[in-house]
Amino acid sequence: MATNVETHNEKDVGSLQSSVERPPRVAVAHSLDERRRAALAHIDGANFSWFHLKVICVAGAGFFTDAYDIFAINIGAQMLGYVYGKSHALNTNQDLGVKVATPIGTLFGQLLFGWLADVVGRKRMYGVELMIIIVGTFGQAISGHGPTVGIIGALICWRFLMGIGIGGDYPLSAVISSEFAATRTRGRVMTAVFAFQGWGNLAAALVSTIVVAAFKNKIIHDDFNNLKHVDYCWRLLIGLGCLPGVVALYFRLTIPETPRFTMDIERNVKQATQDIDDVLSTGQFYVDPDAAVQRVQAPKASRRDFLEHFGKWENFKVLFGAAYSWFALDIAFYGLGLNSSIVLTAIGFGTSPQGGSLGVYQSLHNVSVGNIILAVGGLIPGYWASFLLIDSWGRKPIQLMGFTVLTALFIVMGFAYDELIKTHTNSKWFTFLYCLANFFQNFGPNTTTFIVPGEVFPTRYRSTAHGISAASGKLGAVVAQVGFQRMRDIGGKNKFLKHILEIFALFMLTGIFSTLLIPETKGKSLEELSNEDQEGFVQGVNEVRVNKDGLIVQD
Figure 1 (cartoon, rainbow, N blue to C red):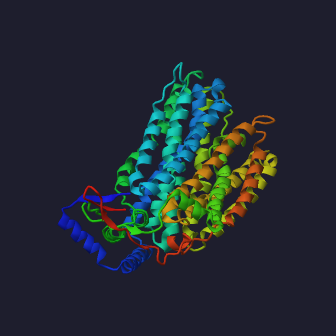
Figure 2 (cartoon, rainbow, N blue to C red):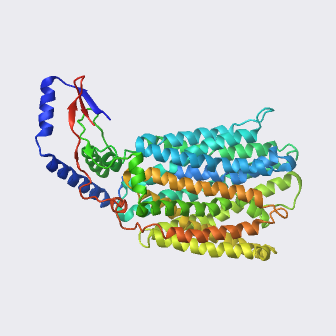
Figure 3 (tube, one colour):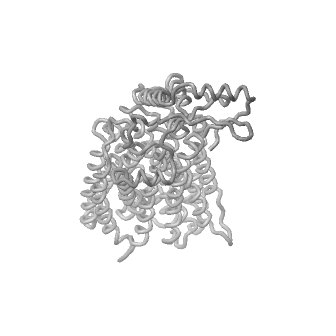
């Protein structure tokens, strides 16, 4: 590949060629190798700074938006049912469509953006995925219902597009935060980014509660067969998901390229070391477009190299362990998360004894408040428990503990389901166990399955492999959502729910074994975890040559 091509006269060419040839090639390679390792040590040993805080907030704002947009459909689907569904409820296929479209789009987005971030750069793609999310979210809010294309079909298309953008956020935010973080604080930095997901989930429930309360009188006085003000509610609920994305977009475009990408993929050690000094000292960076680029010889990404690297069992088992653990976790996480309103209704928290429009208002209010309880009672505390212990206890112990506790909780909720929901008092115990499950998902594998793939792979494949792992998780989400919708009414309305919880327990059990395949990443640099020898990683400097047109080319 020709890079940094300039036109020079013969005197300049001769001068440049002689300057390149002057130092012994082995000495130059050794010098650059030392410089690379010194630069990486500078990142790994850096004190926490305002720049690190900026990375957390900018990346976290994306996850806040992602979670809001994904989980707002819990309540939104019920509102859609009141307005557009027959008998005031979406049928199984409609409910499945609006809920599963985003995870399917997310799966494709994780694979696509994960690969692109390793090919063209983290910085170039960062912000693009947020633009897609904003467009997809706004498109949902203004969707119309017509004789040719129904609103449910339009929403499915917009939610699929939004899912592609959300998918891109996972590998990009994970890799950017891990590659800028110091070794001793990397777990907390990545957890703090991911923890914004809990606040996004809570925000969706809060906004729903506020919107429903604001339209209370109008909803109550609506004709039961024409609940037009509920239509306003879901559009506001979904559409407001654009706002955090719009706020974060500018800051995403100002995040610099990670020095590890510049050093190991662009193979420009000089620029990377300059970026490290600039970013860690001032938080700013500068790239001189006219500066001469010295490309080093180092392992380079290719299909053959990818197959060779992951063809080794010690590398493949890590990828498989990370991917399957995420798959198993998301079976339960999204199986419950995208259907929390159904679970709340099943235990008597979402339904209202009142009929007519008053009953509609009370049901929406109950489900909105119920989701606040679930977020505050389990989701958010779980993220921050992980934050406190991730760099002291370690990723692997937390993941093993989480899967073990979740296995036990789902066994109890599943096999004791009928007894737990028999009375109002007993249903409170079910709600408590449900909140505990949310807590140990986040103080457990939901957090660690995001962190570990952002640490354990070489820089040239870090984003791609994280995308593969995350996409495996979304495959689990799709499987769970399809299975949940198709099986929950076997034997009667919500009658099969207890067996679904038992199935979740089985997948949590398998997650224990897949966790054994991943290494502990606490206290280790990204280069140590890459399973590649860092001594002599830079093998030389690519030769400068003059092509037939008199242009200086460095391959």
